[in-house]
Image (cartoon, rainbow, N blue to C red; front, side, top):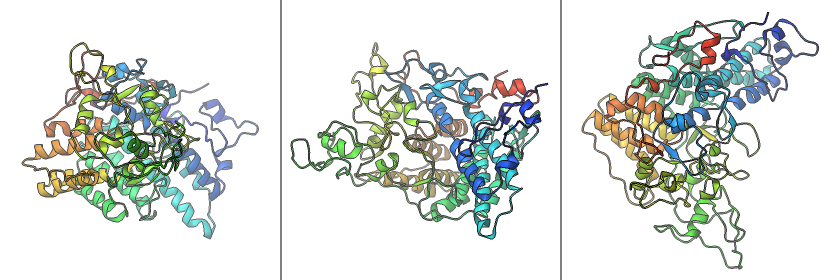
Length: 560
């Protein structure tokens, strides 16, 4: 008889390796003719490495939490290209059947979404199967280092996936005895119905994986953004300890990344230059000149900075900017990226730019979401700051009467351009999982917790100085922990926008900072709602599919 199988135990196709492990119990009970079993697959270090790249790295997909965070909080508002998708999510309708948290339904731009829960458990399941298969392999002496590295990378990725699950599904990460998520340490029976573990049990497992990986992986001082290394391991540890409230360890690991990664904060200058992708001469044969930066920028400067529309052929050029901060977002340079997921023009992974704009990050790209008005106002209020230009496309059309009654809020077109695409595709970018600026923010929070206000504001100032191309930003003054937390939260809101942080930042820091979700009244076509601090929806529901298959799994409060 066919048995019920937990959603988290479903095994999808291992695309690179080229076979499928069936999730149906009948197929697991009986070996079909020609069917490949795990013992057949994991026979060498070479195909173990294939499984790591094709079945673990290729399936790691944090876009769902990035998209959910943006739509659910105060980062975006509907654009004129919206067909109404996710309006319910934007209006905080959230339950256990929501596609974002665990359904296989589409949640954006027609893309298939397995949800935050299933995405990360799928990766965990594949890591567990890889580690199990590796036990049957004895590497040659020349393969030992590669073999160990494969296991270390897999375990570090598993630790990251558990951190993401805890971030969104644990009610209180600072309480070691609060319910965390289901802990899969190995490959359990397909009819296992496991309960949720305590946070501390999950943290212990994460730390064991990180300690193992830290002892094997290299401490890279040259950019290798697409491979897990010791910097990735320490970045995971820094974020984990920040969220769980162990500020001493958060400081330790953030400092380690800052001091040992070989990376520096990506600077905002130069602000004048040429775009190497633009023809040397214009259509009429005259030399192309970008011109000096002015406010407002000229069309020629926009072409050179953004890789916009050339006078020569009218085609968009992506990735040729002279500016290092812009080049980092167009994937032309590594910049300060600690780890990102490689998204080739043609290949695996979701097109993150298509979550905001249908086909291009300009006004002709049919924007489904625009920057939230208050967040855009923060960009505008930063004189000489690169983020206003790197994050907002120059084709934006700000409605001068945006705050007047009777205006269509979708006519205030605040174009999202943080994911401008790369050469070969207009809406496809690498997913920046960890950047150096986040480590500075973690370190600043740790200093506030320790009462070191001067050290904290100096760290925030370093980020602001790096992002400033004209003048010197005013050094913040922290007269209390509340003032300090509010300023750090504000800087995280600006710098880390659309990177998946705002939801958890509001949950863990808004009360201490004396702030709350900050939508503008024009951020929807109906009366705008801000989710109050402490609302149960600051923790996601366990997906209905999991609860239906697993009676031992307890739902989070508020969703019953």
